[in-house]
Image 1: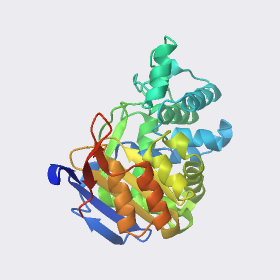
Image 2: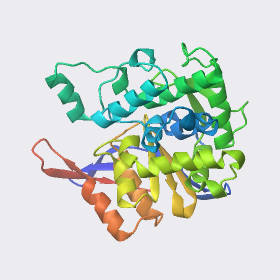
Image 3: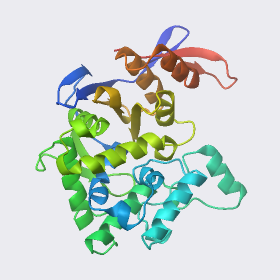
Length: 326
């Protein structure tokens, strides 16, 4: 990505991209398609596979909208908080049981409302609180203590590890872990395998999921139906889903890892911006979808209108451009 001012390149954000179909074929790439990287929160749909496959939705009467919250990186808006609180109530736990740490709402209006009301951010406002609720619910289903559910050696995390490896078709002895911002294990694997997992998620009936086909379908459909829950108001993940009528599902990860599932193409796409620039995501994903002919002219125009690839100063004047250079 080239950020320009007065026609001169001022900043460059480099990255790697790979698109993979359900059969594992690379259909497009820029840079190193096998670059190993931490999957961050873009792994969340696959971290929920064990919970969904083993009847967690039915056991706790989890709605489809609540399932979207379980795999979300939500913005801490009122509906997000309400959904996570509902889930915690259904599994018999409280906000105090969360171990994700306190994080202010991503949504600025939601944060300001807390301040106006004299409240402070809590763990439930953490964008990963839904995932943490899901992991605690899985621990209860396994009949093991909830405490320390974030530890890599916790039985729930051990099962999640196996399912992430299965979803991405990574040998377990090759799948490495670190610790994510919210305290749970985070997975280190090639961008190729991330894209393959999303390709399989895009059309589960073609994705060789076996007995996990129904679980993968439920997760995909919840993400497609409730994109605002998965992300938040004003975010590119939501806009992509809305503009394409749910044809494209997007999931962001911290430090500019980004994954897409294109349902009608049975395609998974992943990119990682080298320096972790979150602002560079929006113009890149829009330009990439156009380059791969995955959005119509009208869809492209709508996305550009929502997220124009320009730089503005504090007065609101356009003073430069943001150009995707492939």
